Length: 491
Ligand SMILES: O=P(O)(O)OC[C@H]1O[C@H](OP(=O)(O)OP(=O)(O)O)[C@H](O)[C@@H]1O
Ligand SMILES: NC(=O)CC[C@H](N)C(=O)O
Ligand code: SF4
Ligand SMILES: [Mg+2]
Image (cartoon, rainbow, N blue to C red; front, side):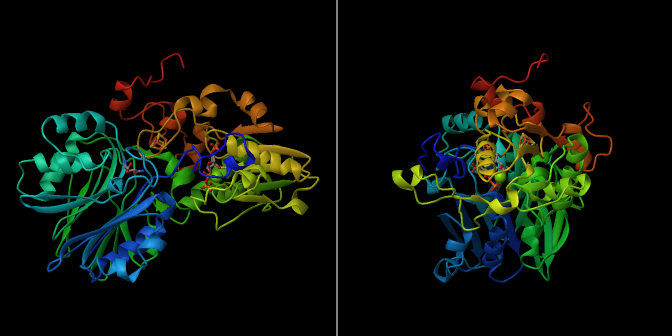
């Protein structure tokens, strides 16, 4: 929606800030697979709220698809929509755009994408972002490809079409060997469900089972919702093909050291999901513990910025011994899109999403714990609300290091100049936000919380942490073509 910069309204609406990523889900082996996909996508809604889509296959009806803007619950619970998606094989996608059109503007960019090849049809759903998509697209168009969308992910279908391999699985491998960047992909043919993670495993993908059914999903919370058993993660660089109840695994890429996105641990994944054998909630609580050790401060109350700051705030309070309290309440009915308010309502300064519990805050020295600072707009407005409520002091503690670099691997970060930490030191940010103190967890502290007892190994970091460190594990080819400047040795 159109926002007036600087009005009290703009901070809690869905402005130009760090967004989640896409969610993907696939099901094979159970009747009406699309219903399982709809449930799985509902559990993954936090990863993408712009649009969703499902493709199914039935031996009689063939391939069918439904792609819609908006929430899963509003589209894929309707009997008339689900009746169009028969079959025991289906895949789906919830989208947050990182390439091509943004928001609810072009249904042609909503996934899954489908291609009809000489050897049969294939649908794909992609979480991540291809860093050489512009180069590939240009090349493919010059060679006669007719693109249907403005999305990076569609390149995969065109590359498959050009492969000379005899099976869809081999064609998918060929295609994915040519793309660069981050990709967890779920694909389906008439008989197969396939899943692939890029060689670095930047984005998540897990495998589940229920009776005769097999499932692939971005996160384990999507297996929980259908009562499926979590079998294991698809490994970085692994491809699985499931057909007739049998799973085959292969390694289509040259071996590489994995670099899972550390921001999944901090913010994107749901706290009830399991990553690397440990609950995301536990990792986030541990981040709060580390933060309390690194950045203690005398205060009366630890308050989370809901919802994503809550586990870290619980850890901070436990480690510091300072009382935990819900000083800010989130309106759970606040969607990502809101009817554009009139000028009059905007000027009233409606706090659309968050409100302060004044009786708890008044007179207290308050520590606010949030997961991240991107542009700093949220922190600044929350500080105003807390001071208006009569707090004696406001201290921010942030459960990630300063976000100083954009993400090119599946998160829609603002350009570098709009990232607060790209232009200011920590002290300058403190003064700009207007708080008594501001501290971020160190990169080492974050790694310790995420299970690396020795902190970050600078020679071989276990995670992708480019948005904090500026060290990109995959060269962002298209961005470099557009003039993006990588970190220099002096920075
Ligand atoms: O510094 P900023 O640019 O304001 O961005 C940082 C904020 O953005 C996210 O929250 P958001 O309100 O987007 O969503 P959430 O409800 O998932 O936390 C994040 O949790 C921080 O609170
Ligand atoms: N966030 C994502 O994973 C986005 C997938 C894809 N790049 C798109 O823009 O649609
Ligand atoms: S740059 Fe940041 S958000 Fe993007 S994949 Fe790396 S750690 Fe994750
Ligand atoms: Mg937030």
